[in-house]
Length: 181
Image (cartoon, rainbow, N blue to C red):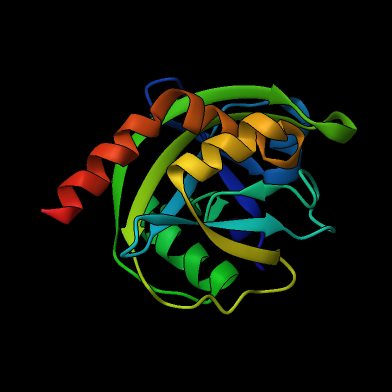
């Protein structure tokens, strides 16, 4: 991976680029940067979730959305989402941007997520071919089942997934209803 690809895009609260920084440094300093969160649904309206690999640098072993990452500098968010979906889950599908939001959370080992997260959605019935360096497990789950699982065992899920479902699950429900038409 080149140094360029190891950098995150620093942004202001309006998502205007203000620079770039090495990814781990941005997470240690808590600098606002651009991120992506991909949500893949199948024809049964189930969401593909992944369990993060246990050797990731944060949120190890937690369940999360289909995939998430950071765009490279000069890479648009949809292209970044499609790239990471292929790299993490061995899948390809067309993605579209649903919304974006910012969040801030202090994680383990002094790391800080301060991200302007672009949420992307896509539809696929493809069976994942997971990259074991990124993902240790996956499953398809309904929105209602996921909400219940998060309520029962919140410590098993990433902060950003919990935040998205707490504040934006109606956006997914509306998209799924539209996709059924």
